[in-house]
Image (cartoon, rainbow, N blue to C red; front, side):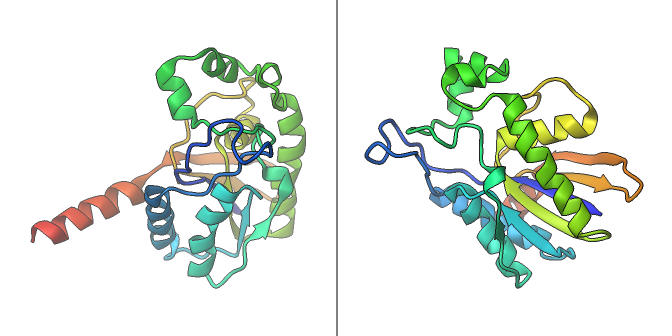
Length: 210
């Protein structure tokens, strides 16, 4: 079977204390909504049997147009939440990287617990079984999973046998594909594909220029 592993689209930034002391759970920006629509249009030509999403709003809003394209209702799986789901702020990882902040270095070095988040080992322990469950439930099928950068890094590191927890930067609505054989092997066949964003942007420019 095939897993289509997707990072959510661009969300809003939320500064602490976010929403009155509760956990930050931002939705998508206008650009993020467009990214999600482009993703859905790009994948609509494929045969997707099931769509699963993290419970966080940015993932659910990304999954919605994709599920609609296939006439499906997205399954919400709490175990696919990001490692910082309980934080009262949400600063996109792109901003942390650009600022070269202490939080950025702690993040890329896997010291997530130092930041008050789940450690990579805990994320791996809850995430990997969820993917394995999907593989068992949909033999021979195709399942799209909308999640987060940390979740995707941890799961794909497991597939590849890597020790690193955060080893690549998934772009917004990027698509990575895993083939899971019934005999056991899991193979990463594509990583961080954003062709849908490039192709639709070029098509739009061509139509406008014409």
